Length: 178
Image (cartoon, rainbow, N blue to C red):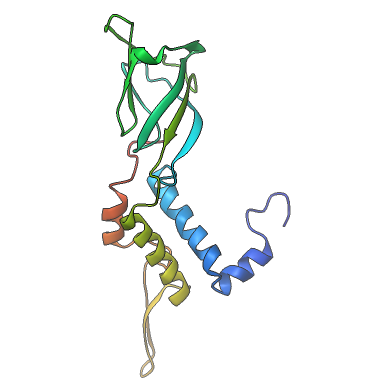
């Protein structure tokens, strides 16, 4: 693998051979990329996020379980002066319950949190498995074939989400992200 390569030839060979671990990792990457966060397992993470210049700050998570530390533009905030919601919303107060705006500076809010589901939600696991299975069964995306008069129909691709899968993933997707 060259320094600028994302994948080396041995990984391509594993993919073409239908290596289940590699295909699952590929499907997980597609799901996480679409949703915009890691989903599971739960983990502690130090994040640097853009300030909004408003009273509301949204962290890149939809399952926030704890906030350990937060600093706005290098000013450490007393955790008693914030409220947070499981879907990643954080609101700051001035100590007397007056609301305070977050900085508007980019990457100026530092937050240490615990977030993510303890285990993969069953509906997300089903999407990952379905996507990996489609890649094994039909890596080229062929959906149907015929011998007489030769007819081949291509799907959107073995790595495209179906409409049912999108309905599931949209419940775990962080919207309005750049």
